[in-house]
Amino acid sequence: MLKIENLHAEIDGKQILNGLTLEVGAGEVHAIMGPNGAGKSTLAYVLGGRPGYEVTQGSVTFNGQDGQAIDMLELETHERAAAGLFLGFQYPVEIPGVSNVQFLREALNSQRKARGEDPLTGGEFLKLAKEKAALLKLDMEMLKRNVNVGFSGGEKKRAEMVQMGILDPRLAVLDETDSGLDIDALRTVGEGINAIMRQPDKGVLLITHYQRLLDYVQPDKVHILARGRIVKTGGPELAHDLEREGYEALGEEVGA
Ligand code: ADP
Ligand code: MG
Image 1 (tube, rainbow, N blue to C red):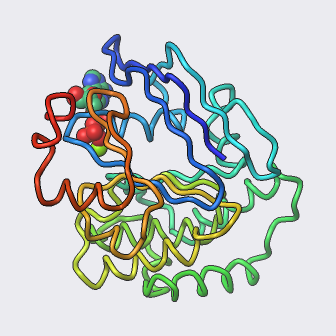
Image 2: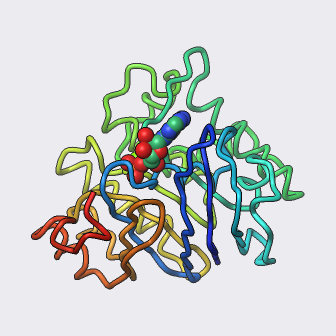
C-alpha cells in the first residue's frame, strides 16, 4: 500500500532524510520511533507534500483510493488527500474564523468531488460528524467551535481523530498523536484509530515516543528512525526494549 524507497529529502539545503526505505502492506499498522530530531516529522511532511521539503532522491509509491499504484511525489497535497492520504499533525494548527463543521464538510466534499462522488448534504454530513464525534468521545459542541481555537492539547488530538473518521482515509500518517493526552484520552484515541483504520484495505504509520499508545494499537512492525533513515525494524517487542533501555543501548547507529 505504501512503498518508500531510498528517500532523500532536504529543507533549506540541509539534508534530513538520508536513504529511508520502508514498506507498509495493506491491513498493517507500523510504528515509527526514534530520537528527537531524527526526521520523523520531516518524513510525515514529505509524504504530505509540504512546501519547502525537497525530495532529492528516491521514490514513494502509494496504492490510493482505487487501489492503483501511484507515484505520490508527483501529486499536489490536495491530490494526495483525495487519493486517500491523511496526515495527523504533531502540532495541530488553529484556524480562527472557521468552524470545525464547515472545515470538515468542505474538506470531505472536495475530496468526494475529486473522486467523482456526490457531495454530502448538510444533514447527511451532520449525521456522519455526530457518529464520529461519539466514537472519539468529543462533544459535538466542540465541533461547532473554530478549528482548534482554545482547544486543550488532548482536545486537538481527539478533533484530529474525528477528522480522520470523517475523511475515512486509506493511509493515515499520525505524528505523535499520543502527545499531550491523559490516560483516558489515550485509550479513546487508541480505540478510535483501531475502529477507523484497522481494516484490510487500510494502513497506518504511527509516529510515537511511547509504548503506551501501542498497548491499544498493536503494531505489526516497529521501526527505529535515526539520522534520517530506518536503522532497525522489529516486532512489538522492539518498542518494549526501547522503553526499557532507551536508544543508546541499541548502539551507536541509533543513539541520538
Ligand atoms: P523529529 O520529528 O524526528 O523529532 P524533525 O523531522 O522535526 O525530527 O526534524 C529533523 C531535523 O530537521 C532536526 O534537526 C530539525 O532541526 C531539522 N529541521 C526541521 N525543520 C527545519 C527547517 N524548517 N529548517 C531547517 N531545519 C529543520
Ligand atoms: Mg517530530
